[in-house]
Length: 221
Ligand SMILES: [Zn+2]
Image (cartoon, rainbow, N blue to C red; front, side, top):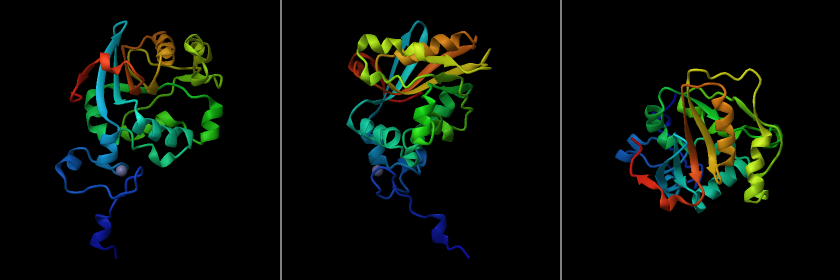
């Protein structure tokens, strides 16, 4: 017979491996099973909003050491257990803010997905409880970090719509993990707009630099 203790078993942070706090008001609101409050706050959640050609963009975290380290462990080292650590505490807000949206991830190349063993962006959003629809594909291992400013703009040559991709009349939330020059996101937007969605917004987990010049809000809503 299971003991009462098993129902309240201690959860451990998948980042620092310390117990996740219980019984705090903060944890009741921002409940988490993957990341402790301390590691979450180290990511510096700082919502930044901006617009490009009438499209609303939001970034969630600062692209600093804690975020870089976590994304490296997850994406670079293929630690699938970290998939919920990025957004889990923000899911309640994201559910409300994007309640009528279909999540469309920026694509990874199939060779990267095969090597890692999972597609990292859909896995990050799987706990959101919203449809995640993959409409785009990356046809080459074009690595932006190996490119200069001009080379990065060519990323659009390697992204295309998947056969049969449909999103007509629906609201699209295009998501990506890092926004550097924006070349990938802009290439994806261009393709998605051909499918005549009702509306598109962009959510990126972290934006590289320039954040200081942008408007910040203390809360998401
Ligand atoms: Zn932790």
